[in-house]
Length: 145
Image (cartoon, rainbow, N blue to C red; front, side, top):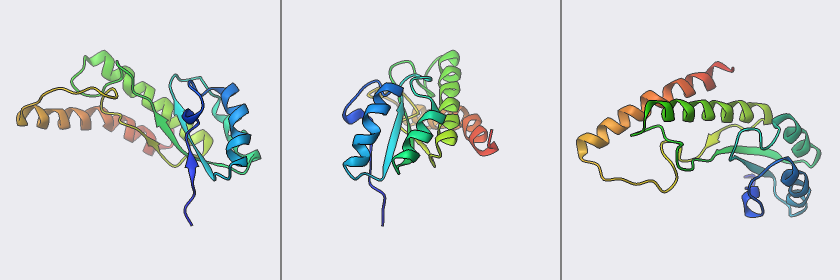
């Protein structure tokens, strides 16, 4: 049987420790099995406290959801933006590991809603840039750091 989960964004933004303390018991009461945990800003919720809160209500962490507002981009962006986005994603990896979530998801290549025209050559270069920018994050996640 598949676990059925929900993201607390249904009810609150930002999702922080206070929101989770209120919502997790309700989520369990609604009969969900798991929670997807968004990270708008690192530090909004404490991973250890959240892990314990979920466990006390019989819920699993389904995933950590990377939040990519303007300025969180891995492609077609200045080097410092790419580096800060990679650092943010490593924080997501750390949080996922701490709460026991099996994955970090989200549109991590660029800010949500960001679109731009690309030639086939530019698209190919964008794929190359994405792989190059994401590789250190993937290596970090794979290292168990």
